Structure formats: structure tokens, C-alpha cells
Length: 112
Length: 111
Image (cartoon, rainbow over all chains, first blue to last red; front, side, top):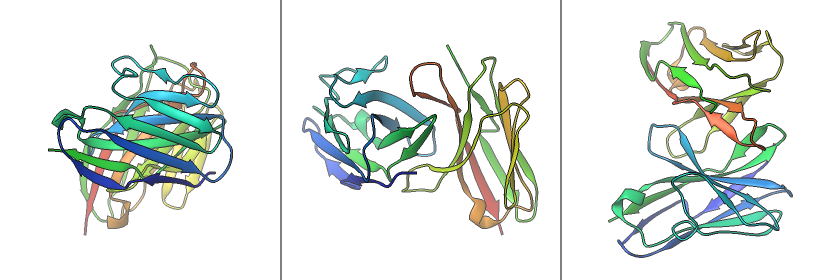
């Protein structure tokens, strides 16, 4: 398994601002993932972040809106840029161990 | 495109009842995971099934992977209020480590 922490756990932000979410893992991992989740709903993959390469974004998500950094094998950040109320959601990072993924506790974002 | 259809999406039952959640696909998955998520937390892995026909038990939870590795089920016996939460199935895709998630099942067990 893996122990994953995220900061912040929640935030309330103003429209037009940006928020950077941090994800820290207790051991080195190759693949990290960022997801978005509406309360009570399933997860939507935003991008895959591998150390040493550009993040790979899913359809509907772009780097200008969700820039990702992966400076080493235990850390990643996701920035939600130029936020609007539609960005209000839960943002989750996960790491892969074989076919299985382990998730952080999530960041609950509210945009006013 | 690989898809996982999860049903039912909502389930409200009384304590002590049994229930089954289904995940179905037309695609074959190398493995399938079941997660449980409580409000304010990330999904927590319950089980991974990898072999067609495999059955795994976790206390009152029984997980089954279909013989053809295209479907899976989660059966809960004598549900308790502590079982309340969002249950997610996820299949390992053929795209380098990604998971394909079902729509989720919101389970409410009333005392």
C-alpha cells in the first residue's frame, strides 16, 4: 500500500484566482494520477503525472487550466487556474502499485 | 473504449438486509478493484480480484470476478449502518496504469 497526504484538505477561493494542491507519498512511485470528483459521484481522471516527463491530460482537461508538476518520485502538485464556480469539486491524487491505485484524502474546493 | 457499468447507483436498505452491487463491461480487464469511500475521505481499497471466477471474502463482504473477467459483483450480508458509503468498482485498463471507474453506488443502511 501507500500513505498519501494532500494539502490543503479544503479551501474556499474567489473566482479568478488559482489554487495549488500538493500531494506527498511516503515512498517512491513512478505513476501518480489526479482526479476530480463531484460529491457522491464517481471519479474523473484529469491527468497522469510521471516523474521526468510532461503530464498526460485526458480529454476535456488542458495544461493551461490544470498545470501539474512532478519534481521527484514522492511529490506532485496540481494547480487549478483562473477558477470559476464550476471548478468546485473534490480533487484527489493517487499512486499506482501494479494495477491497484491508492488514494489521498482529497482536497475539497469551493469557488465563490 | 473500455466502460464499466455499475448498478444500482443508489441503494437505501434497513440494517440486517443483504445487497448486491454489480459492475459489468463488454471489455476484459486484467484486474478489478473495489473501493469504499466515506464523506470527506478518499476511496479506500477493499479488494483486488485478478483471476476469472475468483471469489474473495472480507468479513461480511463477498467479491466475485466473472469467469471471462468482464464483470464483478460485491455482496454484503446483514448490512450494518457502518457499511454506509460510496462503493466504486474500477478495472485496470489497457492504457498504462489507468483505471476505468464505474459510476459508483451510494449505499445507505438505516438502523
